[in-house]
Length: 423
Ligand code: AMP
Image 1 (cartoon, helix red, strand yellow):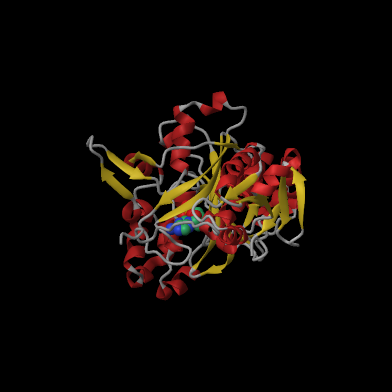
Image 2 (cartoon, rainbow, N blue to C red):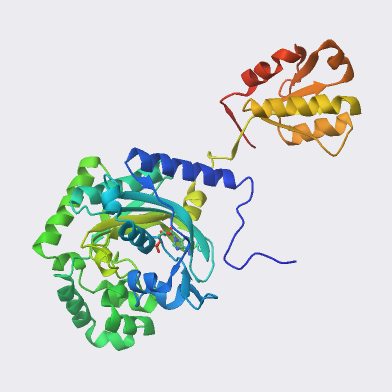
């Protein structure tokens, strides 16, 4: 037997309906907030991520699915969506094409991580990005969208964390202060932290090693080193969130794992799933568009993990399917008429099925039960002769003859519009 690759999963019927629910809710919400959908390829040039995500990040150093294709080109299965969104924004001059560049996308991402509950090698994200807007109000809109999504999905006990990591102007002073504060403690820290102190000291805040935590707790905080403009921006974001009534908490450790963040960073935490509790995360990236060869435009966005949203859904969200009809043929002679009726039902926009293999009426009724059919239509020699079909309500067992010409409308009344909840 050939099995699925470690860290990848099949999303099976019964589960996929929850995905539809999450995706539908996300799409509707994005549209309400004025975001338009974009779909970019899952495969890109490797340099998009080495330059965009950043050479010193864990993603680029350890987690990328990169290979040389048959044409000799280095390509990568995207580990995150933001660089692709930036590429598409620049490549198609989207700011000239769209009235406002507010984009969203849904799709798979690939990272070679150690798989565990809530962490996979192929996972899926909703990605939301805004370009060319720098006012704190747009940061607040993006955070509001993320927060509202979690709430509309019915996910309780979520927590919003925010921070500001400053900009090109004020970050160097903070980095220096960090390294200075480490002082004699640095050689006692893990290898990763020692490397981070050289390459990107902010990343020390990402360290999960137990023994390093007391040292990290004593380190200075980014928000104490913000320049005037960054401090005013962060105050603006908090004021908007307060006005919206969205509760937030500052987390000094929220520096996020990527190189490109500036100013606002945020995460929404859910209840812990295994060791993972971040439902979504994002922030502002004012230098990224330019560093990828585009004009000097700010950007802000977030990515939500769909696996984690699906896992966090309340139990009351169960799989739903449209109500369906089932056609039963009594005897070989009635099969042609039954198939014609089946096709008519489907052409009329109604969900309908029939048993093709097993001819016995009992077996057909059993199949109707298993499919949780809402109504069954019995087509037999006697009924055909009278120009009728027997309509059976599967919930009550009540049966009545209906004129063949009125069957479609009778079924429509029984089925339409509503959905039935699967057990
Ligand atoms: P990131 O792009 O790392 O900021 O991640 C954004 C969100 O994507 C996280 O908050 C998670 O919900 C989700 N996510 C990231 N990596 C994984 C993974 N390996 N498996 C499942 N979900 C993930």
